[in-house]
Image (cartoon, rainbow, N blue to C red; front, side, top):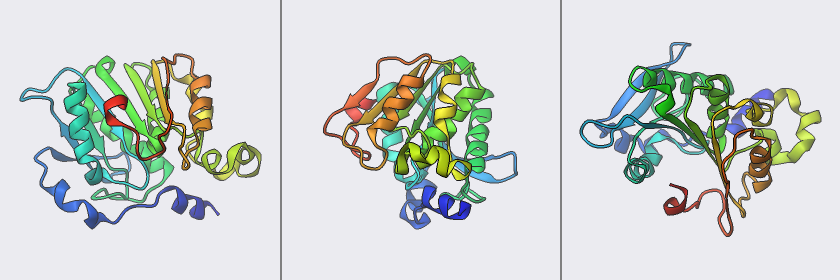
Length: 235
C-alpha cells in the first residue's frame, strides 16, 4: 500500500520533455544529498553580480525543473532576486527515487548550498502544491528563514485527496503532513490558493492558513484552479 501511495504522490514526468532546455542552461548545477544522490538545480542570478536575497523554490509533483524554467526566470525578474530551484530525487536528471524522505533531503541540499552564499534571513522559501511539503518541513526546522510562500498548499497528500478521513484510516501511510508542522513555523507565511482548485481543494489552503502562527494576509483567487494561478498577481 505504501508503494501505491508513493506512486500516486510522485507521478514523475518523462525526462525527455524538458531535458534539452535544462541542459542548455549555464546556471545548471548539481548538489549532493545526505544519502549521496546528485540532484539537478539552477541558480538564477539577478543581474551580473546577483543580489543579497534569494528565493528557494520547490515545484509541484507532476512537473520537473526543466518545465518550470520560464516561470523561474520570470520570478527572478519580477521579484528582483536570485532564485534557486531544484529537482527532487528521481525527477529529471536527479539521482535516487522519489519519496518524502528524499524530497526533504533534496531541499536540505539546496538550503545548505544557499547558506554558503546568503545569510539565512535573506532566504525566502516558496513551495507549490506537493512542494509545500518539503518547504514547510524545512521552515519548521530552520526558524532563521526570512519567510515562506505556499501556493496551493496541501494539508497532507491524503487529506488533499480524501479529506480528514485520512487522519484515522490512512494516517501511517500518509505523506507530507503539513497540518502537523505548520503551527511550528516561526517565520511570516503567505498562503495563496485558487478557489476552483480541483486537485488540492482550497479547504487545504484555508486550514493551513488558519493553523499558521505568523500568517500574513492570504491570497484567495476566485475563478482560478491548480495550474492557472496568475503570475502577475502571485509574484
